Length: 94
Image (cartoon, rainbow, N blue to C red; front, side):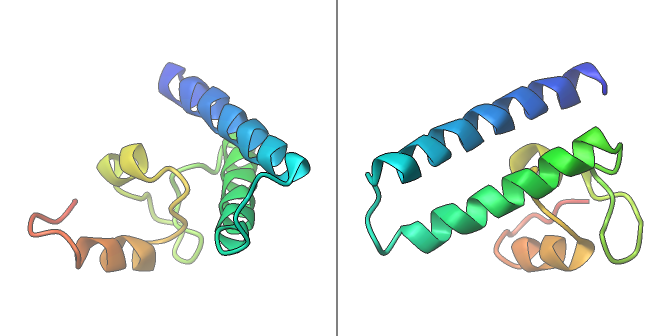
């Protein structure tokens, strides 16, 4: 892992810990609960990718994902997700 990936790994673990703690306390609005559970799955998936040196690679094509996008949304999974997100921005990520 490089320095930036190590920092991201630590941050994702802290976020996972915080979200898990909220779930255990039951301190979650029922409307937000499915979003938190989905976020936890995405975080766990990303942590696994970092551990196996697969972080930043499209799950479909195997191509590298845009580094700028990974800085903003490290849990992004594939180029299709990048295209959807780009549709919301006037200046696309490359």
